[in-house]
Image 1 (cartoon, rainbow, N blue to C red):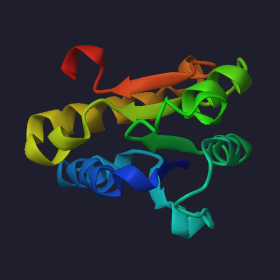
Image 2: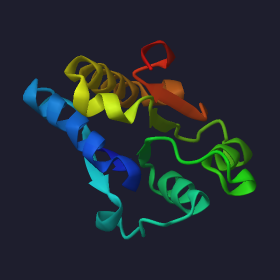
Image 3: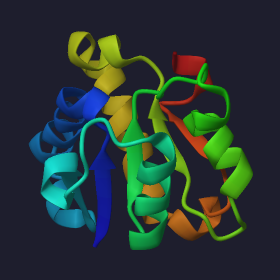
Length: 138
């Protein structure tokens, strides 16, 4: 079972993605589960470093709306690029948070991409970050 950990900044969007998968009948077929920070004991203000290492240590995929890149050495981008190894799990970043709840087709493309990532996880290990539904869809 692959755990998808929703960052605190996109809980509603993560839930919408999973609702879309559930509504279309995919959840029983996919070996994944959505969890939130409180369920795993993370504080909403946990540092990017703490969150990334937490996810890597437990084999969780972090689903985020793109934590700030302007914090220099404290930013998620810096943490990823500094610590990623060939077997690291990618951070999954929703390209446009607002579109998830406003555009059902966009939400479905995000859900579909997330499912594809989970089903072929070994292929994307070592990739620092993956965007859903993909750069062309932002």
